[in-house]
Image 1: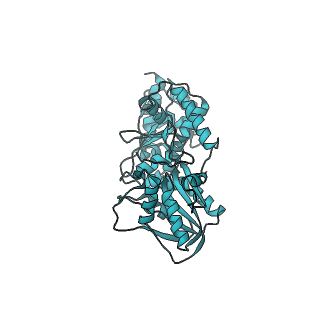
Image 2: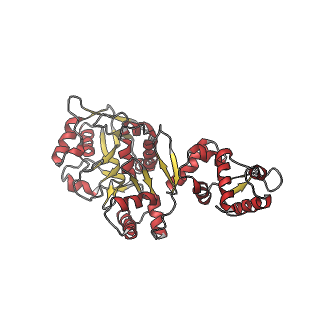
Image 3: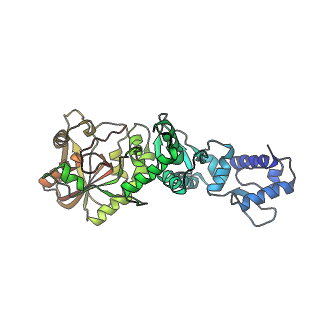
Length: 391
């Protein structure tokens, strides 16, 4: 190990243990000259890895900068770090550190592992040098790709894509596969970089000809993409329904769909909201969480599952008429008011049978004049009946 590596290791250790430090504090730990340490610190400041707390003098202290280069430096001899480690190195309180690290996680630069209440660990998403990805490929994959590994790790960005490509895709041409992922996203999202609302209304006429009760139906994202499987939000729904303490995951879903719902409410003059109730009993119900946490200042229509029926999930029914019958018999609506435009919200839809049948009841009972549907994810198969699995 050369002098530079020795100095950097001591700097990293000091940042993680104590946060900001002075030259004299570092000098007491490293058996190197003050001028040598000073030169190294100056270079780290010039490279924007460290910041100084003062321009000059004995009061000068050094602390970790908050950027990509500084994070790579901090993780250079630590595979995993906790939020406490990061808050100490950044000289921030834990709440502020969480806001910054979330930004890096969202960008795919940092991998977050674990779910509350267990300890959350962070690792740096160092580029895999054996693949020569283009900047576009790196950018798109880092921002959008997520893979839930068999051992329960949430692998985002390049790390998740490479793991999936090498272990699950049965493809050897990883770089060509990366370009195929970019092309697939461009095709399905029509080159939009900030997709937050997908209009799937054209599917209604083909699935329910002559029996359409929804004015429109929207998704925040597709459930899955051909070849590449479940999308980010679809994976989050899967985790949210896994029976763990998953408020953080559910909150992430809410933050991703809030703008979509705001847009529909504004554009279509929505004046009441209804949430489709869950079929299967779980310790944590995603739909109840969404109903509680989504922000809106509108009345809520009571929609319930009828008692006395064995719980049968829509995704288990392979025929469209069975799905319609299931929704017709088990969904109940109860409201004494009349609304012009109602928005129904569900987590996932394949055929839209539940939403369409619920809309029918709202209209026939005189509760709503127009009904719109929104789900977090929906099928990417245009105009066909689809069975969406949570696996």
